[in-house]
Amino acid sequence: MNPNWGVVSKQDGAMAPQLATASDWRNLFPMGIPTIAPQDAFSAVLLYHKDESVIEEYASQPFVADFLDDLFEQDARLAQPKAEARQLLIHGFDASIGTCLILDHPRTHTIFFTHAALAQKQAQLLWNQLARSNRLDWLPSFRFLPAAPAGNAETYDWLYRWIPFAEYDQDQAIQGNIQEIVRALAPKGLAFVAGPESIPALVANLSVQILCGEKCADLQPFHLHRSILPKSQLNPRLHIWCLQKV
Image (cartoon, rainbow, N blue to C red):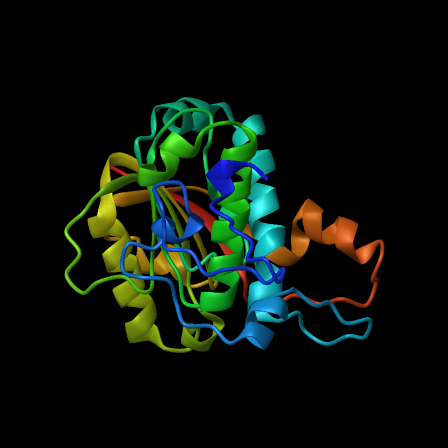
């Protein structure tokens, strides 16, 4: 086994517990790895029903993240800001963290998560990807944190934010999210916000402009999914908005 994996076997074949090393995936969690029951870790998968049931929140995230990944290649307005981004924030996209990362050269990635098992799985996938490409020295550029700290004063020039479905009817919560996003953006910074149809009205008097917006049920990745499961339904209020700080 590769020594960088930090794995040691006892004579009886059981895996010996190891302390985190400089190249251990556990170091992606500077506040400590989340406490997760084994059954929760192994069941951290996305499920899609065959009937008309509305797709669950985390299972909806890959459609949005895949759309954005395609958009960045197609929209010339986004190519240069993406290449120049140095401080990235991923907040709430727990099922699609890997798709949101930019791994062409070292950048600072801050990931706020709410689903611990999904976040741990994504962290392990990231470690594997860095290990395969001999980039384990990039590990200090990533930090997984359990929640956004109150009064966080950091600013970012590239930001992903998923607003929970449960807040869609809570105007005050949505406004708080939007104001937090605007504060977190550096000048000319870009935010990709998954949220309800009300967001354009909420940002009308703020220092951001909307570059584009789409209803997620109309996105190409979801259409491809429906070619396999034609009865699938997304939350009809789910949209993706691209905002730029002015």
